[in-house]
Image 1 (cartoon, rainbow, N blue to C red):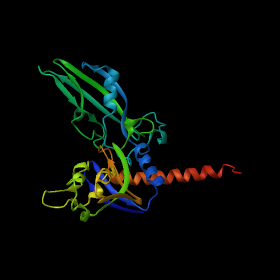
Image 2 (image 1 turned 135 degrees about the vertical axis):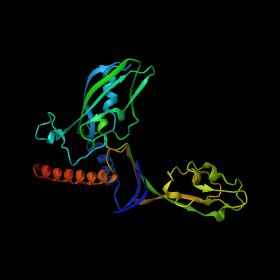
Image 3 (image 1 turned 135 degrees about the horizontal axis):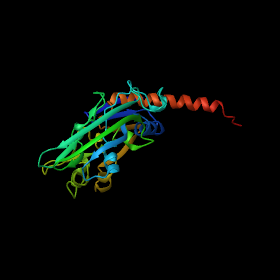
Length: 276
């Protein structure tokens, strides 16, 4: 298996992966989406709520705030010595106590939450929670635990994961001479992978294969059959979108760790089954 990073920033990772079957790459995608643990608020005790939101709606909004996660310092509730009842090894508490003494409407944000662990905080301080008016307040306690997205989407450690086949674009610009419609290809391509000026032949942009979605609009509409679109066998472009709860390094490492554990568990259970 070969892997090459194509693009990386704080919230997005794109890489090319080769010599891997579609079954395996889809398994990796499903593990990232559903199996990697992260923190999320699972219990909210509302002591005062003068906002316009019902308590259950407020609790739902708090539960969906993404929290930075340290998988090395905490246990899943089912793996903790406390049995999941809640202790410093499996639970983090967050509190909010806001009173609006001004004449203006006050917006309460995720950055207003106080936590007993400075490493477990909202990934962004600018997520709105609620608004309160003059002489109003909002006070609550919240308790976050590790969980998996297969149980609830609030524990999803990535925003999105998807992949597509690696495109192969063959473009013969010599066929463009005498084209009756210059240049329909550059107009039809939704990703604008072709460039064209009135005094020149169309050209394919550098690294166009990274953006091509294999829609084949250019191939289907080129009157001179100058473009051929295909895909490389067992090669894919993989995208991970993150909201910052875990680093990309942790996400990938944890993915293969979970995959290995599942294979071992499956093998052990298979040995106990009699197959005729």
